[in-house]
Length: 475
Image 1 (cartoon, rainbow, N blue to C red):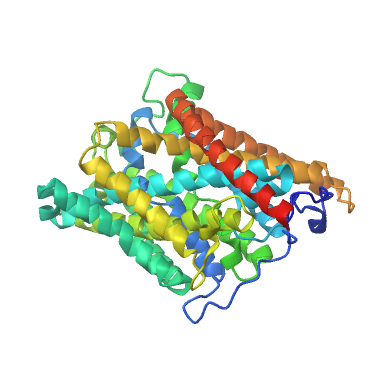
Image 2 (spheres, rainbow, N blue to C red):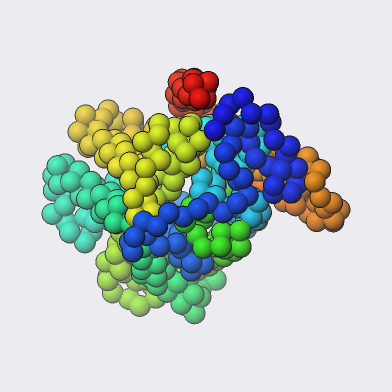
């Protein structure tokens, strides 16, 4: 690797998209070292479960109540957002076909715009991952207390439970990609069973009288859609999951795109049908104040009070599955950047197909934030950090969509059918607009503090770039 190499020609053909200083063709599938029987590439089913499991965490269990105050017009917002998410998924699928390598948005941004853009994508994605993992673990404890009330009796017991919820998926990751895939597959099946019970079975108990008004506020239709969309915007974070782990997917040029589309479409189906069913099962006035809308929906379907236990089990499984997938992703992006000299090289060490140091550093940082939240953290600090991730998560999306537009408009090596070029450019433009909407929906405070977190990484980049230049000049 040398920083003095001439810039590669970046055209539409895969062979012309290597970034400056790259040592390997980014369009070539990443060589997968033989890490033993515990390392195994993901097939299409596991890759699809990775996408679905990471998109659907624990938020779905509160979503119907969160948007109910706006009325059923919130379903329109959901449909609009689904179109944007599908466009982003299609863009990731096309980018993965061009660059079937571990790292996803980092790889695409670096190939199009150079090292600095790639680093920003990797840095922001990494921040998102470990802060979100801490938030997921804390949220999971709330559902654990329903199953085991003693957990909520003391601050220390809640903190230990949150740490256990983080370290169990981390241990599965450290055991090897074979176990990561197995846990993800099982968790996805277990959590989707009760969700589908409500999403599909609830339609048979659907009562239109429960729907309430189409517009339940005094806002205009456009205002109501925008307001409810601001709550729903981040429901689709995770569509990039298969692309980030492309190096661990069999035949990534083919399967990453398919898994991304199937996973996003599956999550969208559960979101839309689940929310619609809850709207039709629980009276609007009750739903607006509900703390557990899926519990109320199950109780309305079958009577009794066992719905709370079922939903709590599903929520815990859902969050552990999401933590399992996000822990892997949190290590994959630094791994890809470390191989290019843009992250400390220790992050590039891999065992059993997993970047071990990346997993350990991520879970340690998330654990420290969890302990801080339960002990010394001033009220509101943890919430601010979580809010920051709503901005940092969108930076890789914007850079990826912009990279796709760059590749399409700068292609010189092969002729591209005009119709396909127009279609793909329109998709990339829609994905960019969707990502920009995500930024706007995060709010002024999140953007302001997220930019501070993002720019803090500039110092890290300066140190890594200087070391990379010095190493290259000594060769």
